Length: 426
Image (cartoon, rainbow, N blue to C red; front, side, top):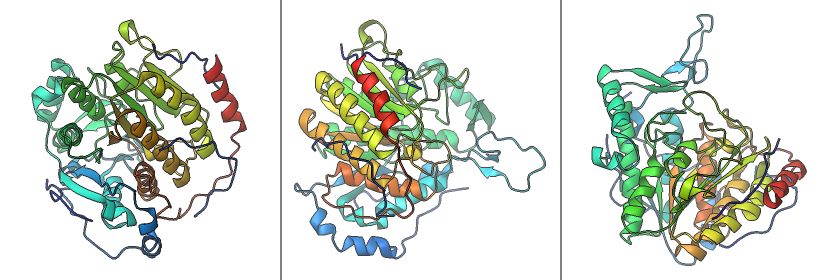
């Protein structure tokens, strides 16, 4: 049993190939500043801050000379969740300008472009994704739920739950997200790379075996974990740093001791019938899975130091005890200091440090193998920067390649650290 007992705290593919660990001590408080249809991301000159940083990139090259395999398919931009008041899809009739749904194609266009044209580009190889097959979906999801999605797609448009809209193009994009994640996992399992990143949308970690939730239709990470288990991996650990509880992934493995699911998230609780789980510390699994779901609900504003402390004090010991044969790193940049969907105040420095800690655990336990799966992150530009920093950390680059363009947020990590100490000692 892995249980850490605790108490609650207040369609065109990418080119097939395109050239382009350690645990860390908890930092002290410090300012953070270094500072419809398919659309093709066109090349343009790299921004000046990136080009100046690239001049020192050679000093930050990984010792092994490895590359990060990025899996992407342009067809995923076809999913359009519409407009309304934030993610509601509602038009009250008295606003001239409605919000684009936060889970929109622009956010991932910037993620693609920063990886293609930013200073990390030379460490990346590009691989085309593919749609998932129906039989693959049934490894995680029920046949009845998949049929529900197929029928909703046939109708043309349907609101599945609050904030979650399946519109024309959505089902095809969801199949591509699932299949692309499976391709990234298979790339690792077949020995072609140790680190692969599934750059996918719509996201998946809220999708449960029998229902949609929180912008998610199919659980991309959960399907990949199933593939690893079916391919002979005996133990897989999932570490989810999206600002919201990875309830769908946890639900899918709630009764097994073959998968350790860990989620660091904002303490938001249940948000309705589609999301009955609370994300609290007492949701620890059932049956054989008792003790194999670790929830870490963090106070709002935990920041870089708070997240690093939580990783070192709670996540690292749990991974050491479980000893996984493969790590799945579920990333969402909605924990950032400027995200409209979160309040956790992470900056590029914080994401980079988390990536380094994940790399250290992978080197120690899974022969360096990590599948990274994209989830949330809704600030159109800063999410891309935070992704870049996360991948720098996972690649174990010795020096930051990009300065933080906007992030300075004064932290008071003392309360967060007290909460984490309670979580670790109860």
